[in-house]
Image 1 (tube, rainbow, N blue to C red):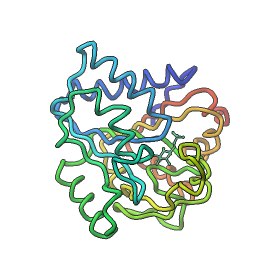
Image 2: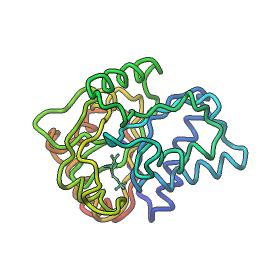
Image 3: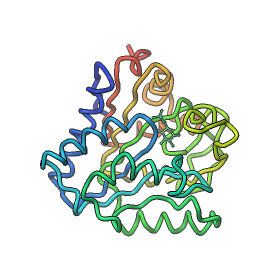
Length: 242
Ligand code: GLP
């Protein structure tokens, strides 16, 4: 694993965007695995800036997003499909048909999860997977549990995640209780994983994930077994690491 320590969020975002743009330049038809949450917003802003300068071309890039709240669709400004359009896709020249996100509006969980696994297979796997991390060590919406869930699945969100994500909703009651998420197998099959973490509230998750035992109780810890992980984190997120 390679670790880049950043002094602040801006530096972290620039470094993450650097790594992603290197991928886009080297392989213009690459598959980017993308994430939501507050962590990647700065990275996406930086990519948009470089795109506007003419340094990046997304016309052949394909994307697969990690997850989506079950029940939410693009008409909801809390959905991840809305987030991705608002924070990235609407500002770059990606083709709509090259964008893939689990369909939160599909009530048939079994069918939707199977469809999404097929989507990941059909794009030929992920070249670089961007990840944030939950305070409890979740990646995507792979929550702590007794086993690593391999494939795309419908997950019951934990109290800790509902609590952490309520800031995006009018009230905690509006936070969906379930989500569709890419499984650990797809994340682990990505050729490269880029995990970004900012702030002190991520310090424990980062410490346990990369310096603790590999356990489904801390889902991100499985990344210790991945051959090509880059961790970009600021001082606060690395504060428990000696
Ligand atoms: C959500 C997303 C994750 C994300 C996490 C952390 O639960 N499903 O993909 O990593 O939030 O979000 P933030 O970056 O806002 O702390």
